[in-house]
Image (cartoon, rainbow, N blue to C red; front, top):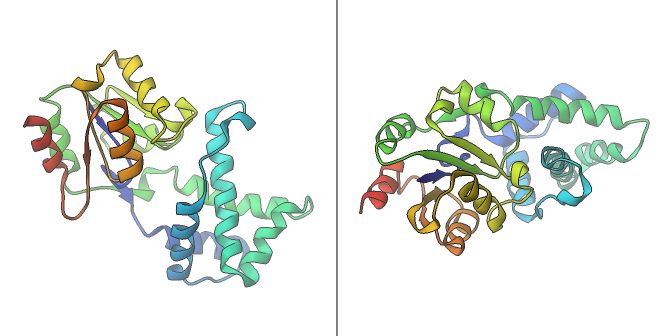
Length: 231
């Protein structure tokens, strides 16, 4: 069995994240932030923000959406000025719909297949990898992922798509790996996992006993993972 991460492993944003944030902010509010500054703020906030608290929400997907809303507000707050003032409006009941309008459009954008692209090696890799055994996705994502993969034409390649919203846990937490292994009746020692994040994918999968491969683009391609599986 082969497990694959999704974002930055088999798919990637069609444009830099900061570009999308800047465009949606300008459309919603008229506030202009340079995409480079927005992207830098996003990277810093994303790296520093702890996982969702799933206990606060009845469904994992609601927890993921709330997490992204908090992250978007933090990205704007860190930028300061008008962006920070706008982000603080989410705390005011009279101004909350304005922030919600911005975030809803941003969240919906990243729900569409058009917001994502396949890596050049993805399709050919999936065709070759399917000869080794069934494929599944194990990703820190939510219910937007399956329609995205379907829209990009690769959804049917996978026996199942597991998200952190389904497991109510994000990699490297073993709960998401255990969910996939149990659901597919796989033994960890007979299962391979590939992802771009060293801590979440490599260390997380290794801790559960999977045979893990850390995909470091552009040094690696998915075919390096395929060679790893065949060795």
